[in-house]
Amino acid sequence: MFILRDLLTALQAPFSTSSLGRERAHWFVFTLLAVIVPFTSSMTSNLLRSLHTLFGLDLNRRSFYTFMASSKLPWDPL
Image 1: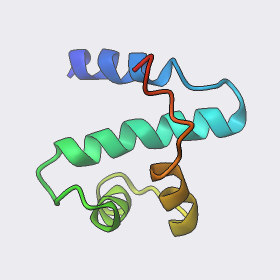
Image 2: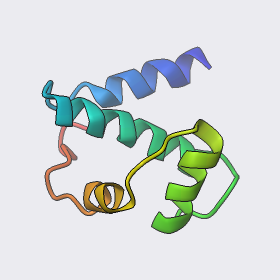
Image 3: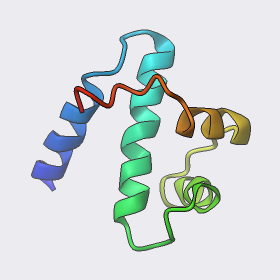
Image 4: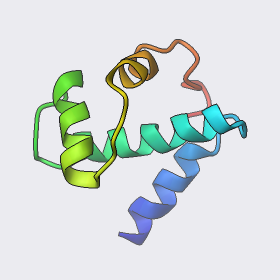
């Protein structure tokens, strides 16, 4: 699990240091974990449900869908 923690920490680094950037980095890592855990398919609605069930995150549906569709995610450094 240390390898996974180190990888997920590194994946958060390219995000902005603003409060919104930190929030997006947090959501990004938990979304990756929700995809990895064999709990559900990776459809966005199922991911939102599994983030709540597995990790206890109470995300606003609209904000999460906006995050998932964002063109501002730092894909190049990732």
